Image (cartoon, rainbow, N blue to C red; front, side, top):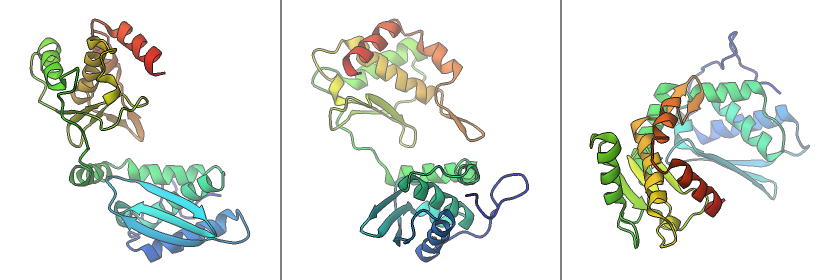
Amino acid sequence: MPLASQSAGGQCALPLPLGTSEAAREAFERVFRRLRTVPQAPAFDIEFRPFAGLRSQITLRDGRACVRLSDLFSEAPAIVVEALAEILLARVYRLPPSPEARRCYLSWVCNPAVRERSEEIRRARGRPRVLPPQGKYFDLDAIFSGLNRRFFNGDLPTCRLGWTPRASRTVLGRYDPAHRAIIVSKSLDAASVPRYVVEYLVFHEMLHARFPLEWRGCRRVIHSSEFRAVEKRFPHYHKARARLKHAFA
C-alpha cells in the first residue's frame, strides 16, 4: 500500500519533523490501518533511543509492538517516519513494503546532511570496544606500519588498531570510519594462521581508509574499481583469500 503523501517526482514530501514519541505512535497506527494486516491492532510502545546511528527495531509480543528508534528519527519529517513504520510493520507481518515507502525512507537517509549528522552521532556515542593491538601471535601496530611503508610510502595516517573481544568467525575485519579504527577478529590471532593472512586483512581495511565509501545517489559503493585494482597488488592476494575462504567459510 503506497504512502499517502508523495511529490510529483516520486520523492516523499517534506512536512515538519515528527518530534515526539506520541506523534510517532500515531504514525505507526495510521500505517497499520492502511496495511490492514490483522483485525486487531497492537498497542504501540514507541521510544526514541540514543543509538549510535540510524538504528530501528520492532518486536511484537502479547499484543504489543515495542518500537525503538534512533533519536535521529525525531528530527525526520513525519512522512519519513511513516515510511519507516511501513518498512518495519511489513517485516513483522512478512509483507513487501511499497516502493514508495522505500524511496521515501532512502531519499532521507541518503541525504548528505543526514549522513553527516549520523556520522557525528556515531563518533560521539559509538566508540568501538577493542583489545590492544599487541596480540598473542601478531602485533597489528607493527603490521600496519610495515604495510604503510610498503604500499603507501608511509603516507596513510595512523589508524586505531585492535582485536575484537570475541573470536568472531563471520566478520573477520572491519574499518570504522567514524573513529578511524581497524578491528580484526581475535580468531586470527592464532599460531595456525599464516602472517600473510593477517597482513592481507589489515591491508584490505587500510584500503577502506584510503578509498572511503562512496555514495552514488542512494547506492553505496564499498569496493570501487580502484580499490579492487590496488588490493590485487598484495603479493599473496589469491592465496590469502583462498585460505580465509577455506578456514572460515
